[in-house]
Image 1 (cartoon, rainbow, N blue to C red):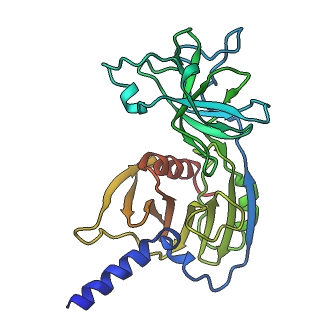
Image 2: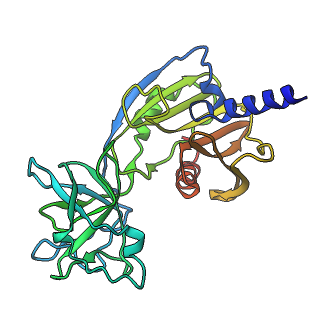
Length: 307
């Protein structure tokens, strides 16, 4: 009995591991196409306007924005500074540490072209130092091993805001899939990413997938971001066994579509949103993905309708 239960656990983790979460990717018998596309950030007309600097180049006050790119041409990089207190401690209402960022320790540098996510101040904007000059907190650096959790100057000489979404290359992907699969094709119009990503499409008669990764020709968990897939007769996600660190629930997607959100964690977490249409199982999968991000991609695909 114990051996049987152990086998079930192994099968479950095998089924929902990051690179095997889509059944059709476990063993593609006949891959008729595998094409790589590279996407960078692009400005979308439907997105909110980006913050603008003042006449001195400073992004002041409520010029808060999440996604930024380093434009400082200095070959030595853009200085990132931090004090001994943590960001969480600095955010406390009773914090007494003066924001003398310019005097804080240099903990590293960001190079030109690197992108990062900034966290807002308590006033939902940039952080002003004791001289009244604005700074940004580098909460997440997209560069592998890049410095983060420190402050940089919020000035147009050093950084610029970038859009948080990039357009999905619908025309290119459609040209690779249409006529080679018999399943209705759902693809999003945009992706909620700001870093450069790589897309690789695969297609069979009854299925297709578009894999998203940080690097070209990704074949490991480290570079894998997620995927968009479809499979006729695909096996839907099932509630996990009791005791697993996971979340499983029914959700409502665009156009009153019923979907499933699943997030399971082992060495890393794998999240997915799935729905069905005309006997075809559609999945959006992401390593360490957030529900709102997956829903955004799924809704974009559903709202666009069969391509």
